[in-house]
Length: 394
Image 1 (cartoon, one colour):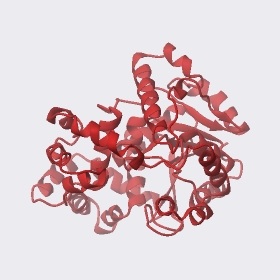
Image 2 (cartoon, rainbow, N blue to C red):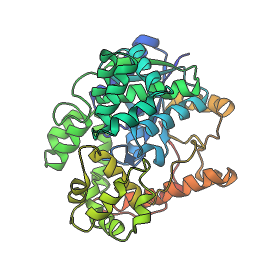
Image 3 (tube, one colour):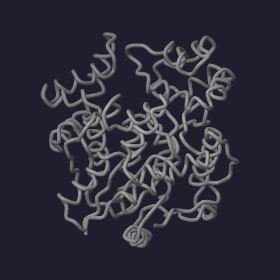
Image 4 (spheres, rainbow, N blue to C red):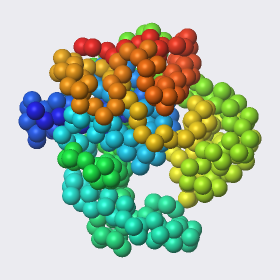
């Protein structure tokens, strides 16, 4: 049986997500199992997830997935490269995935693989440093270097967000020398983070604007039902603005050395953020004051979120597999995974105490972040749920 790995956030689910699962089964066989790696309560753009992770994971299973695993927090809120590497490594470590299926604007896995190889070549970093020295932004400099290593046509793939993620997935597979085969499907509908159409970003924007019914109509049926249940319990929608003063308080209490620890590129960006935090009275004002042509807003937003959550450094690798939701097929996958996985499969939170120290540290961090997330509910909730809740079995 083929097992298609899908890396996602489902923030929230819409028709394009179902289309990807359906296409995976059309291409790989109707009995293909869908194994998802999904971000938890926080997402890669440096934001709070609209709905808590188990509700989203259960909706994904109802909508066609068989098993949803959590991408741990440090990777879920990192750059596209680290996000992708963590998720690919997790799929590899399960010992179950035969394919990695993802959407892209180009629909050409071979081309994405060529770009990935160029980005990972020995000469890329040196050439990139030379290009950045002329003062251009990272994206433009990177594209020029790749054009010199491959072709203008291949380099142009880096102009589209889902192509970029696809390149990072391929790079992760190449670095791990994985036998997982990349399969890309042309993206259907609105572009990633588009302000209109059936995109997750558009749905979140509609909810922020008070267009609730329109937003709900763009969700999948299972996601809509999950959202309405969470909303009725006072747990949705979740927006970072709810915790804005807490985030600002954390930022204003930090010293320059604290900000420097967040600047993973060691490019001095932390100085701009440090200077901006005392001038803005909203998170958005702070980020816009720190933003430049070279530094994208998403990177600054991630730095602010890392500061708020107390993240310090990206661990070397994901130390365990943690399922969030599964159906009967997913439970069979879990049973096989327990025998094949390169890392422990964690279904009972208390069992983390029997794992190595790095796993305990990560789980403790996840628990603290979940407690902070619960304060962003429309009706703030008590903490401690990470030590109590198990996967949702459907």
